Image 1 (cartoon, rainbow, N blue to C red):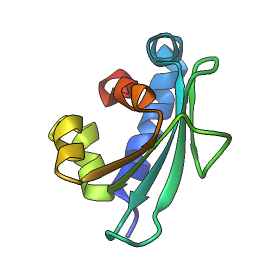
Image 2 (spheres, rainbow, N blue to C red; image 1 turned 90 degrees about the vertical axis):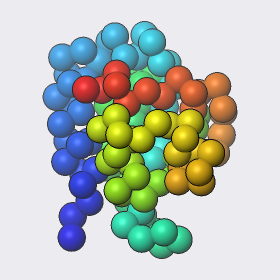
Image 3 (spheres, helix red, strand yellow; image 1 turned 45 degrees about the vertical axis):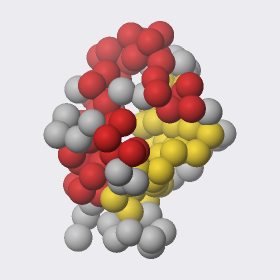
Length: 113
């Protein structure tokens, strides 16, 4: 079964093409997101670059990330839909964060909608 987030990331590419400079100016960091279908199993990796040019979103790990997020596909989808608060997700253990916490707090899915 395809990940729900694959379609979300694809739609974000178009948004970055139109308004990417604005997101890059506000954020200035690069992220790796591991989206898991099942908790504890290796997930699909995505790189969200909000540091360079108009930004970019690519499947896979590309370059060095300032922060890395690990979430279940359903939780990531709810986060990007605005149905799950990032702080709540972290506090409830639904989202794991590694790396620069300042970078992590600047990542806002609303910038990519």
